[in-house]
Each structure stands twice: as structure tokens, then as C-alpha cells.
Amino acid sequence: MIDTYIALDLETTGLNPSMDRILEIGAVKVIGGQVEEIYETLVNPGRKIEKRIEELTGITDEMAAEGLDTRTAVTELVEFCEDLPLLGHNILFDYSFVKQNAINLNLPFEKEGIDTLKIARVLFPEMEHRGLQALCSYYQIQPEKAHRAAFDALAAMELYHRMGEQFPDSPEELFAPKMLIYKGRKRGPITPAQKGYLNDLIKYHKIALEESVDSLTKNEASRIIDRIILEYGRIQR
Image (tube, rainbow, N blue to C red; front, top):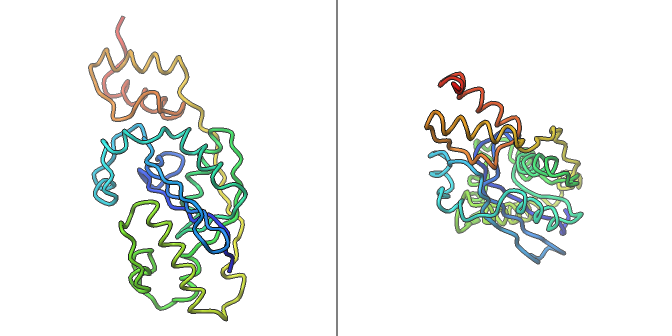
């Protein structure tokens, strides 16, 4: 086992890192087995939060609106993580969202990671459910709030240590960090021309978007413009 790493958990608006957005970040810096610092913030996704996500996390549109913008939050997280490996439950999911945004922002974020879910699958092959909440229940780990980023990051950290204590004779590589791979393409921001035309369409057809125009990527803006034209038609001069 290692004792120096970043325990990371994200709440997101969905499951696709190229389409969905970060909603909350929780990162715990562990040095020599001790929690040294915690970075946590809500992130304004620039779009309405689906009801199912609100019910799961307890994060409302009003709460998210007070969060940092994605650029600031991801930049701060990348700096916070330094050159340390990551740890989390299904860590590739969280890494993929950070990595996609890092690509968009031209930030380096190549990481090794420890996945407590993969460890649990090896150690508990007969266990029916190996999600973070199920394993916390098994070990009587009681996070203050489930499905909130910082608490889930702390829970994953504790889970890692508990599994190591229970299975001290496990192969060393099972608990060791491995390279995380996510291949994403850069998603550039909405262009000035797209922004102008989209705003004109919105005004002309008197419609409202659930997304903030300024938060859109070039691809997202293109899809929304096409959708509006298909449903409402072009602007008639």
C-alpha cells in the first residue's frame, strides 16, 4: 500500500465526460497516511441540474450557481493534485472528467491511480454489491453525507486502508497505483459567431435555454443551433 496520494471524488451532471459537466469536486491530500489538506468546491455547470442528479446529491441549481466556474475549479484542482497519484472508487470515471476539462484548458494531467472498486472486486468476489456505499456499510464507515464529493473521497481513503488491514497478505501490486488512460479530444469554447447567431435565434423564437450560452463548447453550440432550426426554423429577414 501507499500512504501519499490524492483521494478524489466528483459529482457530475451525467456519465459522459465529453458531454456532461463537473458539479462538485472533493479532493483529499494524504501525506504519510495523514490528511494534510482538503480541496472542495461546488462547480457551476452552466446548465439546469436534472431532477435525478439533484435527488441523488442534494445539490440544487441555486447551490450550483454559487460555485466556481469550471475553468477556475479544474485549474485549482490540477494545482492541488501536484504530481501525486489519485485514489478513488471507480477512479477512472473521476479522472476522465478532470482529464477532459484539462485537455480543453491545455493543462497537463497525466496520472496514476488506485481504484478501490477494482481492489474490492478481487478481495470480495462473492459480494453482490461493491459500490462505495455498500462497502462503507460492510466496514461500518459512516460518511456524513453520501454522494457529496469530499465525504465520498474521505470514505474511499478509509476503505483503502481498511481493505489493506484486512488483507495484509494480498499481492502488493493490487494496492499499487496504475496508469490511468483517458483519450479525449479538445472541446473548444463557443465561437463569437456562434454566440451571436444563437442569441439571435433565442430572441427571434422567444425560447429559453437550460444551458448558459457562455458555458457552451463549439460542438454543443452547433448541436443546439441545429436543434433550434430544426424545431423552430431559421430567422426570416
